[in-house]
Structure formats: structure tokens, C-alpha cells
Image 1 (tube, rainbow, N blue to C red):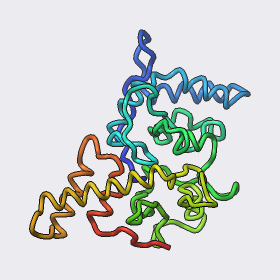
Image 2 (image 1 turned 90 degrees about the vertical axis):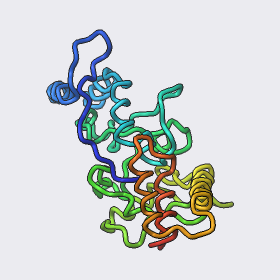
Image 3 (image 1 turned 45 degrees about the horizontal axis):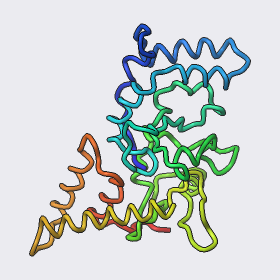
Image 4 (image 1 turned 45 degrees about the vertical axis):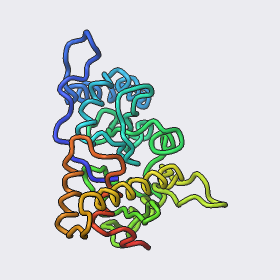
Length: 254
């Protein structure tokens, strides 16, 4: 999980063979229809389903570096296609169904991320506000990783207590003999933990290959991390790669 920049919404979200319509226009039209209907959730779902999802995903790939907003697996067009997730669930927040800051790409994996989340809200208590959108919070400053590939909420995360509890619940605990699938997103599923460990090993091998016979300096490691983050298509699990390169694995662990 990282902060994401969303500089522009799609210029055309109309189904093929229909006149072009911007995302802003689609949202304006939708909100006018929403105000006049009793079935808000149904209206929201119908208007969202009427958008051209391929056009939406094309922009979201660019914004997210072709990674799932939650687990950072690679996402790409195919069968199944990545899911367009409502950070704040459509059923509970119908007015945000077409709000661009509320839409993110999630991998289609069944036991984690959006498939796991469904209509769950990112909060620990019904009376608490939901976690901020990735455009409003740098989640890379709140999430840490261990050398084993496990994800946790950092003790020095810039979050208030309600947000901290919500993020802990969102991520979920590592699996063991008693604890299996858990958390809103189940981001410590064994498959993800193993994939992050493999990503760390990949960066370790790169350093051994590129800096044979010597140790890479802090600046050289920072340059590699910056290059990974600057790619149009970031490598899968880029956050744990960056943390390894910056030598901050396990930092801020509660």
C-alpha cells in the first residue's frame, strides 16, 4: 500500500458507439439522477456499471504503476480483468460511486484485496471515519515489512488512534496454526508473505550482481529504489523492495 497521485480522470468513459463523455460529466449526471431516486444503491450500481471499464482501467494502470492498490501484485488486462474497487464501498456511499478519488484497481485474487473486502468499510468501529484515500495519505509511511515479508502498521505511523486500529484491522495478522484468513484485506496471506520474501531476495541478488566485491552505498541503494518507483510499470511488491533497499525492514514494528 502506497500513496497514489490521481492527476486526471478519464476523458471518455462512455460505452463504445456512444458519444464521448468525461468522467466529470458522468459524475455530474449521476448525482442529479441520484438525488431524484429512492433506491440510491441501485442507481449508483447501474450508473457505475454503465461506464466503459476498459477506459477506466487504462488510466488507473498509469496512476498505480500497474500494481494492485492493496497487495501490489501486477495487474493487467486479461481474464479475469482487475477489479475497479470503491475504496469507500458503493453500497454504503452511493454518492461516491463515480467519484474518481474513490476508484482504484485491485487484483482479482479471491482470498485477498477487493474480493476479500466486498462491502466492508476501512474502520474498526462503525462510528469512526474511514481510512483516508491513498491520494490523501502516504501509506508507505504507515506500513512496514519484516524480513520475512510480513506487513504491519508502524508504531510511528502518522495516524490517529482510530485510523491506526482501522489499518491494523484492514491488513490482518500473519497466519499461524490458529489464525488463518483474517483482516479486511487479508494482506498477510501466506502467498503474499512468500511473494514479498521473494521480492526481497530478488533485490538482494541484484545488489550482489551489480556490486560484486563491494557493498552498495546508501546513495546507490536510494537511487535503485527511486528508479523502481519511477517506472511506468513498477515491479510487483515494490514497497517491500524499497524498504529492503533503504535498510528499514522491521523499522517501527510495534
